[in-house]
Image (cartoon, rainbow, N blue to C red; front, top):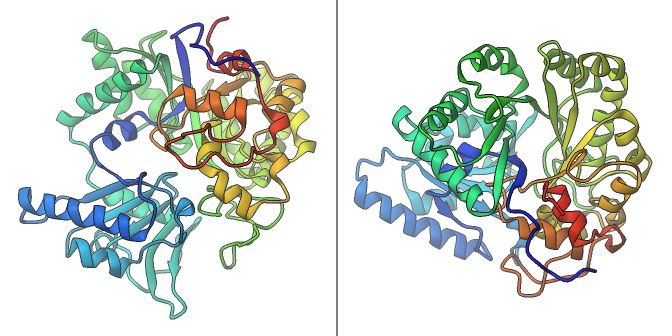
Length: 438
């Protein structure tokens, strides 16, 4: 293991982030430090009282972020009834740190158009208690119903929000940021900041694939070559580990009812069509795939589209790839697929990994095997933070890649036993994955 030292360069690449979300989260209630239900509820109660003082009509939403239920002593979500008791009739939502689970108040349910007898939306889950009543917890696509109901930033709020987020990234040494779920207005806002001389980093955009044509047409107005560019489309193939919606080849130890292997969100055929849709416009594709089932399915789609991708000269990126079956590791380099991974997630996921996948820990973030199989740090093996899901501190990913556990004194939680320690990287290799020069 090499000795800790500063990066060779502060001109790092943040390969996976959400700029607007990060800017907004910097100004909302953070509950990441909570260690249990009582502490979470007390934080929500205090925020509700603060909002009541400045917004007695209760028109503003209470939005809280960063909850890590799996790290609590009693890993159970608070209920909608408990949330209603502290926020009253105000619309409120509490987001899991991974954004794939939301606890919503009754008022938020109504604002999102979710009735108590509503069926699960496609690709989503409205969690219910044994009596069939909603607990208030929403998973995957059901979360989007509430997120879409939260008032978006106004036109006047957009530039300050984006500027704040990019300034935070720049403070950690990032000179380039890839936005992996770009809003329709983001390109225009970035171009405005660029033209004012207020853009502190180069930015590449990946909007939802269903909007790629619209973004491609608009990009003719806002592209600033080398500074603000459209790079590809984005899809979601599964959920997350903490929500137990990541698509696994084998069941979780304690799965959600009716979802033993998580929640598949796309088929091979649908992924292949997404690749084709982006390639037709000359763009690549970024695919969110956390579980080994999702990763394999994306690789299968890449195999089907190998000739098309080569002819179009476009790349597919698999985002996260947190659990990968050993037989699939060589396929990345063989198929020309880039892997964009966030080792810092390991620091946040230790509890759920050891609890739910104790027999598959050797399959978690196989960084050393990726390199041994032919992936190149900084080119086909990229690091990022996934901010605001986790904080954009590159040191977190460096520590995770080297130690494979939390360092002593970590603010996230206890150190714990290293996960697949044979997959560790040297510090130099880890910085290279961020694009740092030697």
